[in-house]
Amino acid sequence: MTSTDGTSGKNRRTILVLLPLAAFLALAALFFFRLGSGDPSRLPSALIGRPVPPTDLAPLPGLTRDGKPVPGVTNATFDGAVSLVNVWASWCVPCHDEAPFIDELAKDKRIQLVGINYKDSAENARRFLNRYGNPFVATGQDASGRASIDWGVYGVPETFLVGRDGRIAYKLVGPITADNLKRVLLPEIEKALGK
Image (cartoon, rainbow, N blue to C red; front, side, top):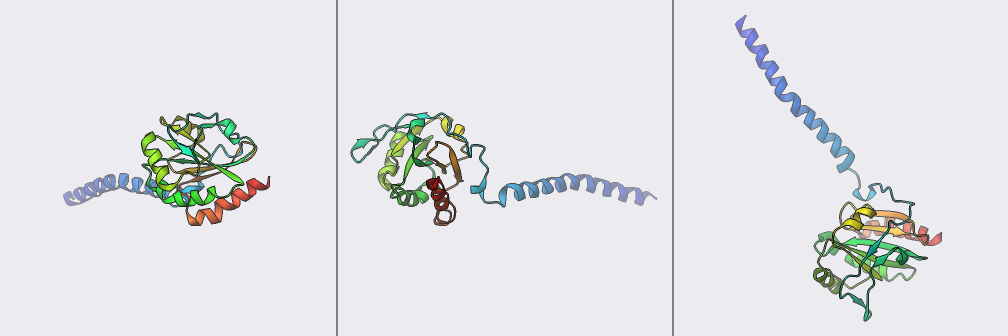
């Protein structure tokens, strides 16, 4: 009789130890399924279809394009133009990877590229643009990250498509790649241009 009580006590202790582990594994699987297995570029944005948030970003000091100072970013920047707004930083590795695709997009004169430089030093940002070329008609410096939060930015890089009406039409989370450029971004740009 003593050995039975000892065995059942051990079993209860084992169950009590394994129960939290099982609960943790179930929660981890749920989070992985809901967050980790999907395409991060498909994160929803509450701003789709809404006007761009109030934006007033000073220009990146010392930045020029075609010999002229590049202006900062305000809501007037988007008046009447289809715009791609790229939130980037010199310290962001994927931003370096997407630079050639942004340069390619800048050749399309039907759209304008606008940059928001996120939590970066002006010197490093200028060095980055000197290295890859400056595709932006306007670049605002968001040193505190506050404006990017207002835009709903999760992290850099992110790219927003803004229609001629000043409303956000599409949001791409993560870097522009050959695949998502062809499969998603170019069709979204064509749709915005057609409106």
